[in-house]
Amino acid sequence: QVQLVESGGGLVQAGGSLRLSCAASGRTFSSYAMGWFRQAPGKEREFVAAISWSGGSTYYADSVKGRFTISRDNAKNTVYLQMNSLKPEDTAVYYCNADGVAGTSWGQGTQVTVSS
View 1: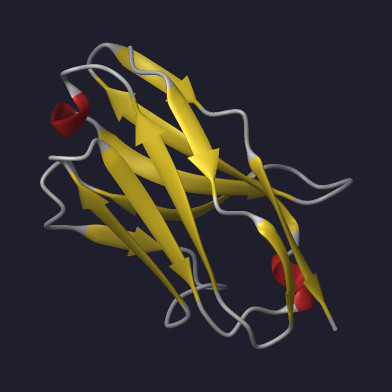
View 2: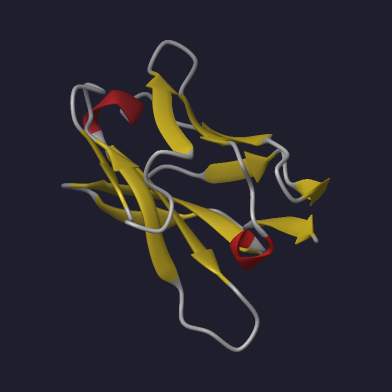
């Protein structure tokens, strides 16, 4: 399995942008599909975006489609989430996820707070 470390969270005003990064350890990063999930206080963890191992396919929750972009750099073992036009309802802890034949791994999360 891979170990995942997220970064890039913070406080931003509504309408602003943030870019989250998730750095993965291990030599098999390129074999994993990667995703971002988020969990707001008092709510269930929910899917945000995912990307295939090659980067050729991406998937988004309806709530973020057109505002967020997921990408990956397999040479750097890193997956990104570019978040534009942020809304207060995007406030949550964002978690990176790796899913492959060796199993599923989660990062520790990074807080994103969007003020109105």
